[in-house]
Each structure stands twice: as C-alpha cells, then as structure tokens.
Image 1 (tube, rainbow, N blue to C red):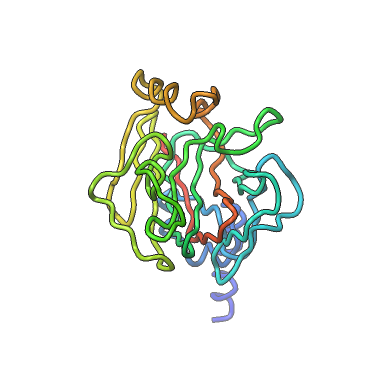
Image 2: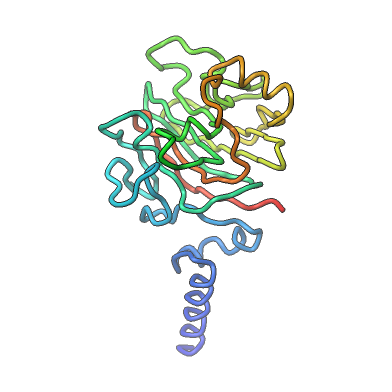
Amino acid sequence: MKRIVFFTVAINIIGSMAFGMPGYLAKVIPPARKAGWIVLFDGKSLTGWHLFNKTGEIENWKVEDGALVCHGFKGPSGAGDLVSDQQFENFELSWEWKVDKGSNSGVFYHILEGPKFKRASETAPEYQIIDDVGFPAKLEEWQKTGADYAMNVPNDKKRLKPTGEWNTGKIVFNKGHVEHWLNGKKILEFDAWTEDWNKQKKEGKWKDYPDYGSGKTGAVGFQDHGNKAYFKNIKIRQIK
C-alpha cells in the first residue's frame, strides 16, 4: 500500500513539473489540463505575473482566499495593471470575477510592452468589468460590463449578477474573430482588423493611439483602476 501511495505522489510531482504547475493543481485539475488548458493563476501566489512594464515586487495585487485581488496602485494610471509573463496569439481565456460597489476594472489581451507605452490600454483591447448599477457616474453602453471597451457593446443576452457575487467571463480570439461571454452566454462578437473595425478605431476613443489593437500576439492582463476587483480560476488554452 505504501508503495502505491508513493508511486501516485511521484507521478503527480513529475506531472506537475512537466506542465509547470504546483503539485496540488496537478491533482485538482487533470481534466482541464488534458483538455489543453494552461492555469495562469495557481490560487496561492503571483508566480507568472508582473506589473505592466515593470519587474520586481508587486504590492497592489494580493492573493486572498484563493483569489487574485486588486487593492489599487498608488501612482500613474495604468502603472498597476497586472500582466502575464506568457504571451498568446489565438486563445480561449476563462476566469471568474466580482467587484465591490462602484468598482471598475477589466481584462486585457494582446498587451504590448515597451518604453513607448504608459499603460496596457494603449495597445490592448479590453473586456470591460465595472459595477454597472452602482458606479458613481453615468456610463455609456460601451463602458459597461462585457463591452469591448470603447468599441463594441453587449447584446440583450447579457445577465450580470449583483455586486459582490461571482460572475464567469470568457474571451475567445481566433484569427481576428472575437467573442465575449458572460455567465455562460455569448454577449458580443466582432472581427478585428477589418475595414469597419479600422473605421471605428480612427473615429473613436483610440484615434490618437495608433498601436491600439495592433498586436497579433501578446500578454493577457487585469486592469488596476484604483478599485477593488477579484479574479480566480484563471485559465487559457491556445487555439491552433
């Protein structure tokens, strides 16, 4: 019996090393791993993440009760955005999230970093996350949860849970075709880099940001908008 237990533990350790994840995750999520999912947040640490355009200690994001929690960066806007070390091209990104009353955040993809950029939003499209009901200012539809921020708005299938309750979010990006999902429903889809998309970009909020949406490959990340926001069960799988 002891030999069997030892052998099982050894297999778990070897498997976890091979897939670059902690041993406890290798035990908990073998179906997800088998389906090609990469776990981006291990529920215990900030391993695999960094602040936008920075290295070193991360002070404004904490791990609390298995969730990744934004506490608000004291500094320039965008300097506290959390960015994955890994980069992705075509993918399906899935996560759970909630916000406090009045909070604002978002999920970025295809983030480009470098000295010419001050914040992730200058290059990265954003799945908007916000307290639609309790935010202390009037919101346009393109500013509300689930929107492709400042570009495309959700459809009538959007069903948002009350502030403080967990929602599920998903972004699918496949060769320029983009889908936003909220709580199991597809609430938005569009095609990037088309003539219509370029027209929207040039006439809207991003007209002075020529690199917005230009990345074909880049990191994913979470926005620090100075408010508390909570994320967990963050995983991604690449689409070939």
